[in-house]
Image (cartoon, rainbow, N blue to C red; front, side, top):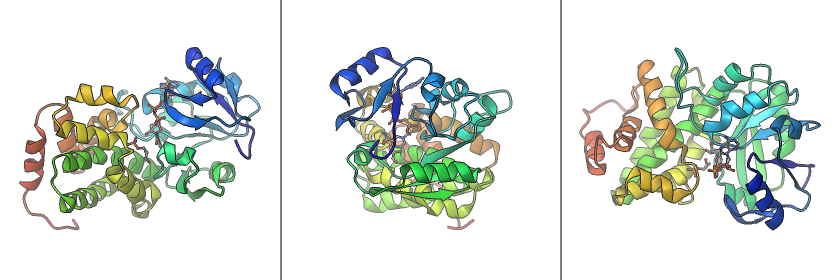
Length: 313
Ligand SMILES: NC(=O)c1ccc[n+]([C@@H]2O[C@H](COP(=O)([O-])OP(=O)(O)OC[C@H]3O[C@@H](n4cnc5c(N)ncnc54)[C@H](O)[C@@H]3O)[C@@H](O)[C@H]2O)c1
Ligand SMILES: O=P(O)(O)OC[C@H](O)CO
């Protein structure tokens, strides 16, 4: 909003009125005044997008299909911020990545994703952040870099949307695991091992879906994994910490007040990985824990009890 005329669309009229009154989003981003120039609006999303040069969808994964459907026919670039895979299944398809949902629900859109290590509070406070804009379309990548690259935000372009989206989804599942590890006081060695072997899992899964290996060494892979697995602002990490303290999953989710995408996408990631013959033991352990099939200590024992294996398969 410093550099562009920006309209924030909200689906919920009560929330819209609250934001307009307080000029703050007290429910989701407290203590951050909304810029004076920011225009707030409701009504049909497509009307709000009329006249825009770029549309950003900033909802959880669960709302992406609906929101993209509502934007079908928009001709300017559209990008989402969601990190996850779809939990619902379609005939013959499950664990769809955001761009795969778009290809099915609004195929005419020219679209992409903005991802990378970025806690919203830090971005909102203009703390230095680097992101990646991914799309198969060069003009969409350029539009995102042009709109967002600035003094406190560096935006790199990448045409590997599969790799960028796999990184964003899988890091959430792995952050639950590292939260659990830290909550159980297993130590810094264990955390480093989980992050590194988690990166190997993420990369294997991504390669099986057609991603490039180098993407996982970048901002949306290693970068976001390190941030989310170690940063206490992470909601996914918090879920792991709370489970380690003996809270139920329902209690952990309830106490967040925000989405922790790893809770919703872990099963679908594992299901899709199994279907592709990709081994993801850490993600499997997270799913067993979320399903209540194992206790935290049993999940750790199962990982440590695996047979020896070469580091690079
Ligand atoms: N918060 C972060 O630091 C951060 C950073 C990068 C990416 N993300 C990703 O962005 C996505 C959203 O995360 P968040 O932190 O904003 O979640 P959140 O739970 O804090 O907020 C979700 C927002 O989406 C709205 N929403 C929910 N369902 C909707 C629907 N059906 N239609 C329209 N709006 C709907 C809610 O009203 C709320 O404003 C997630 O996929 C997350 O992984 C979050
Ligand atoms: O709070 P989390 O765990 O959803 O992580 C937020 C962002 O994705 C970090 O890049």
